[in-house]
Length: 487
Length: 98
Image (cartoon, rainbow over all chains, first blue to last red; front, top):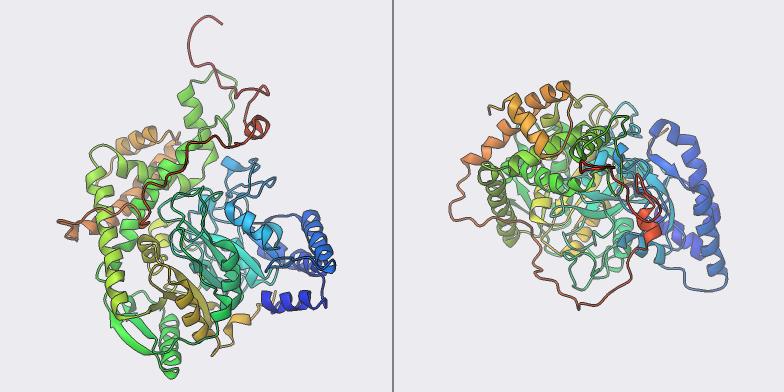
């Protein structure tokens, strides 16, 4: 496999028997061996099992049996998604020795689609962070410049695709955790509408915001992967039971009369000049294809980060209360006798890293007696206003174009001591989670420093097809998406 | 936002988190900064706005009350920090005769 090849190019080679899945998996394993010492995207590579999966698919193919749309394509899995028999660590000491006893819904789907699960990739602990530096186990580097962060929390998923180690990966997005690392690493990353993809088997962080989504080299591959991820699942009560449109077949159809929204509040202080320039150039790309550009207002968008950092930590403090050292996860040990309360407190104090503790504290504070109305309820009201802003904007436009992140990748270590600055990195992505709408980050070239720039498109709920077709209209006019960093 | 060290200790207790004195000091500053930033929400007029807990328009998902296969005992205990093969073992929590 050349590192530039897309999943769909590889699939056509597999289907024409120019390439076997075993050969493809072996090429990915070789690439991982040669570059992952410097990138450190993978927490574990399951070489043997991947080759076995590939052999099974190759045999099916030569027997003329159906092998599914992903037909032996290797994929990397963010390590907060359960694969039966695999460790699922969430990059936390708390779950360092945890083995999943069932498959997530998306994993069942990927297996039946013929994907080859090759290994688990790094994340910020429990998906909390924007740089992957909150992993308890390793720091993943940005393949374009190994002194820089890959973004987060799905930093391993983004870096693995960017470095050509796998053609596809999956991640999860609670406030931008797919889109921001996709932007930092120069790949495509998409968060579907809340409810489109089952959360069954995704380790819960903030249940009203979490959503699983695809990483790929280009928009068309992201569409292909999403077709295998989504669908109704009765085990997730927020999973929606509505028809899933065919995406890949439609992807190259330009949208006639497309209306692209621009939010003027987005272009204030704090936005990097080159990112701003990329947006200007994207506007021109759309105009050249007959699209109209309209200004839209999102008056409450500036409160997104504030509302999010009440809501997400509140849900996290509740979700993570299950880690008590009793049924699974880290248990504190001691020579002396411990009370049950001591056991809880010490197990949690030892098992969780600083960012997870910080967010649990923030959530517990916001939900505590006397503060609930002032913080949690207030944030939920602001959330409604933010969601209504998007609804109103989408009465005027089909999609909203914005930066994905205020700047290209920052240096590893640059923001670790300043959590608030780290949080502000999510200012453009958080709104989509609060409003539940789908969003995608697509590569928009390199900065003068040689770092990828990402632009984001947002669409109304359940309008993934429109979102992907609009993204493809930009992508096909640019060659950015297949660039590969030299490692 | 005036957060005191006692507030930090109280919340850590509520959240069942054992923090070191250094962590308490660090969180005092950082949580104070974050809560200070969050105060911008007070400038938003939310009179007559209903809180929005999630965006899903699905409500009350029902299924028939039938027993389904579940994860078996062996798998359930697979990740137990301490087990005798049948039960999860926990420290003694009641005082009294052994």
